[in-house]
Length: 83
Image 1 (tube, rainbow, N blue to C red):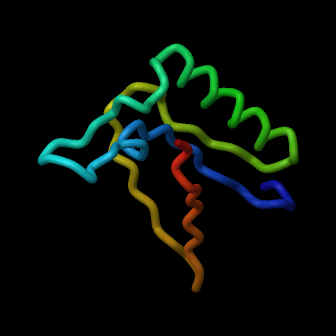
Image 2 (cartoon, rainbow, N blue to C red; image 1 turned 180 degrees about the vertical axis):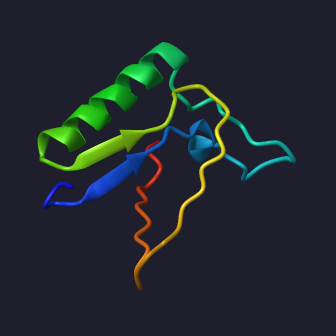
């Protein structure tokens, strides 16, 4: 166990879906798969470099992720859409 903690990083392309118009989400702002995987791996390595134990999902795979929150706090990270 890392003294700084552990983190699970799972890529999820649907996070960039724009569902403000119509009935179907748009993924036109998502990165192409090759670039997206490179960015994902870069992020994973950056998190590892600060000393956290990192587990990852499989890129571009259908996965069932089951978690159990053990504690009083769940932290959600969000950022503003770039235009």
